[in-house]
Length: 382
Image (cartoon, rainbow, N blue to C red; front, side, top):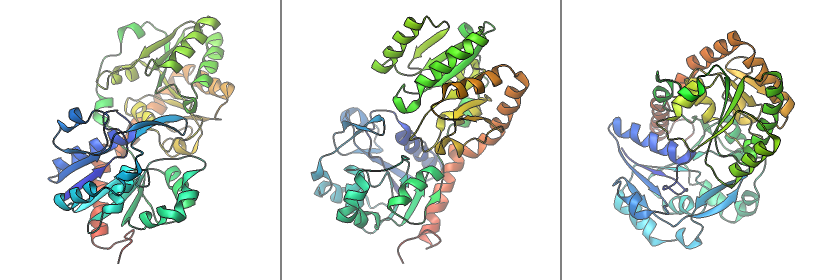
């Protein structure tokens, strides 16, 4: 098959959706299929060096869901003849659009698609959308109805989109490179001094709940002085703000490691005794939870919809009340104080995470395409 994977987000910047697309693409090629990625890029010349990527649109930063996304917003792109001509020239068998209702590149491809099998994957979760109710009767219903099949990466993502677009959705989760994070690598020597290490990985944004982790760490540190908090994430303005808070509060053993390469990240997980993800909202999944599970590490995470679909309380980790530093501190202290429980939860997570390998996820997606081509369950068109 000839397959197009469409991203609405700047392909020059790493991110969850682009990582998902990249891994799916590599596995599809390994299975013998021809694959092209269609995406915007802020560095088009550099992105085009990879001959498998077709660049459309200049992305701009947009604040959304407590984060910043980079996507083109020029309305003319939707009706651009260039998109339609590209689709006619390429003659794809399947067009798979990630976040298919995200303006403007995703909707442009959806608008111009005609004879191809068109599949949409919905990744996002939040309590409500301001744009969907307004644009739904004007144009989104028309575009949504062009989808032959619909995938959601989690129950949380399905719950969100189906509030506005009730339909049948097939759950196919995000994946991770299990072998990469399960590799037998050495822990970092600077963190191998006998202290118990708590690890946080991610951007220090409001929705990630880092302020609650810092408050919880302050509580745990008083009870268990021989512990350390390791923070992996970009050294941006928000990070510098929390570095200032740490200095003013005179908190000891808080290490802001900054950006860590994908190659080095498993060593940070291997150095941790407990992984913590205190996100408060708008998480449809939990890729970092899977990375910790692959590394054999137990997790303390907020009991939010997206995380509850990945780990079960008392099985692979502990789920605690969101936005509650005392509850978070109790969970962290419980694990740091019980090596046997840490080992048990870590082993359970490591056994489960194989279900989320990119190879298995890619095969599920490919099987879904074939089911739709046969007119099986989930197919929209007769």
